[in-house]
Structure formats: structure tokens, C-alpha cells
Length: 322
Image (spheres, rainbow, N blue to C red):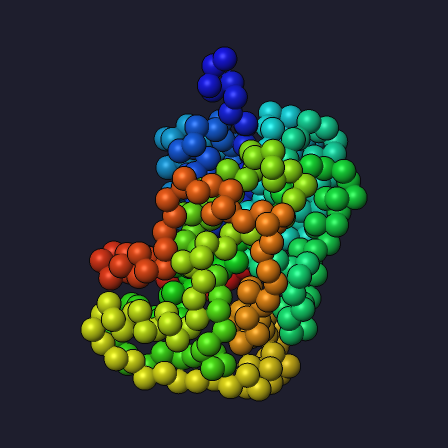
């Protein structure tokens, strides 16, 4: 059988976004016929970065379909040319995935749908109210997917590592202070964005992951703030003053800051004070990405800090904090 015939046709919504672009690149590198559904280039919301990525993807053989999420028939037509659908839409567009679900039902041929999760395992944690409300919108999409009978994979990718390293360590700055949330001892899970892209393409095509939740929790990427700072100090040969923000301050800010500014504070509390990402066990029957694909070479936090030393990624916009 022709190997190309075995490859799933993958359609990605949000493919020019912060995490979506890594999924597109991974899909192409793994040999899948890949399409992206994006806003028209002339739309007011279309950014220069998106246009640059479209040129990159076009050169790589990616099919670019321009349309809005309100264009039901156009989406159905695009879906009929796909086997797997991945949504990497940013948080403000999460509720709009109901339109994608409606189009998937109408198309009737999709073998797997991955909605825009790629953060914490929202069905297993109870964070502060602003983050809870944030997650409830994602839970609604999960429940709608299940109710529609669409084969799915839900992904708990945990933290996007390059983004969080920029937030926590400010490696582009030369100041000598680093803010620590809580006491700095809660463990989090930081996965490099490129690896999140690769794992996502793999699970999207893996029959073991059908109608399952997959967690990305490689052991070397479980780390506390204090350990992360110590590693950074070892690699840079510098010593940083640690400025601790007490839990009660974060809770108060979550109650007093106006939306949406209260959401990032609540996320920081969930991850780095409560340790929500490590609040549940991964059992033998659960699906964890590094166990599913032991052959895949992923980027450890230790290696990622080496990358920041030699060629630091530019800090992304706060809107990428999903």
C-alpha cells in the first residue's frame, strides 16, 4: 500500500496562532496532507505574523482555506476533504467551536476531532472562580463534542514551556529579581511548544487515543519554580533575588482585578500555588504522551534553558496564555 494513502488528511483551525503553527509544522513533517482554515487575508483581525506563516505554509504544501467560522457551508466543504480536525483557536474563540461541531456533524466523515484544550485537564481541577469560568467554556465544548457522537481526543498539554519560561524568568531582561508565586515548591509541567505540536499530531492519528484524554506529562518536565530558578542560576552563573508573592495576594487580585485581567492571576495561582497540574495521578490505564511514544525525543526543561541561553525565543503576547 502507498504510504501516503495511509496518512490522515488533517485540517487545523487556528493554524497560524501561537500553538497552532507548531501543529501545522508537525503535521507536514510527519507527512500528513495538511490544510488550515483561516480568516481571509483582508480581514481586519489578520496580523502580519499570520500572513508570514501563510507564505511559509504555502511553500511547504499546506492547503490554505480562507473563511469565517460563520460560513457553515464553506466549513462543511473543507471538512469533507479531511479525516482529522484539530482546533487550536485562542481563548476568545473557544465558544465558536460549537460552529465547528455543527459543521462536523453535517459533513459526517470526520474520524477524529481535537477541540482547543492544550492546557490543564479541566475536568479534574477546581481553580479560583475567574479561571473556573475560563475553563467552563472549554468543558462546554467537550460535552458538546461527546453529545454529538463525534470521535474525539481531549488533550491536557499542561504548560507551554517557552511561554512560561519567559513569564517566570524574564530571560531577555538583565534585572536581578525573579517573582515567585506562593512558596515556589508546587510542581508544574512545562512542555516545549514544538513537542506539544508533535504529540498532538501523533495522538490525533492514534487509535489508542480515540475517545480518550491524553496528558502530556514527561517526568523530566515536572518542575517547581524554585528548581527552575536554581537551574537558571546554574546555567547563567548569576544569582537572583526571589520576590515571593503570597497566596492571599493572588487570591485578592483574582477578586479585585477586572476581567479579563483576573484570569492570568487565577491561572498562576492554580499552577504554581495549588499545583493543580500534579493534583491527580496518571495511572497505568491513563494515556500519557511520553509513555505512548517512548521513541520520540522531546525537549526537557534542562535543554530548553540551554536554548534560551544561546538563541532565546521572543516572548509571546499575553493573549497566548491559554
